[in-house]
Image (cartoon, rainbow, N blue to C red; front, top):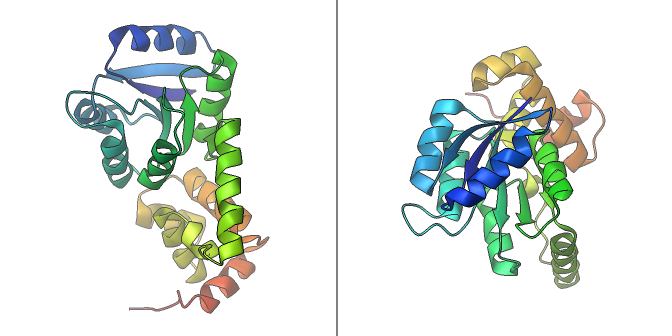
Length: 217
């Protein structure tokens, strides 16, 4: 069951989303918030799997600020931005803030459900036009020699997991150190292998060694 927190300053929008999502067998709206401050407080109390975040909220913190702070406090909570802004600047800022996905309010209901399911399982989701824009920008950066290293695409949590794997800790030991479930650690490990193009734990160790991550205190 995917536990969802709705964040939007319009009560009517929240009511419509709750009606839609609660009608799905594998989803449950466990809370609502009308601004960024309330979103952070409610998320800390309820620990949702996914936060459906609006960007523009006139009172309290806006969605981008709330996303940044929320990811620092609860890094394992996925934030899916749901907005009316089909705009590159908002898209890139949302991704930089730590959002796992970005979808427009004009999207079909089926697409929203798919997006929630995607980010809930640790994947990213962007609506098709946004994906095309990101790919175009990435290709342009390649041409200019400006692309970041693959290591820089890893999240802070993934880098922590990589370093601990390289030092020989088991998934259970990593889960205890980082206060995560074993399942979450395994998910981070799978994401690491996917991003780095590696297949085994020894491959991760070799990669970490090359990156100079095996410094012991």
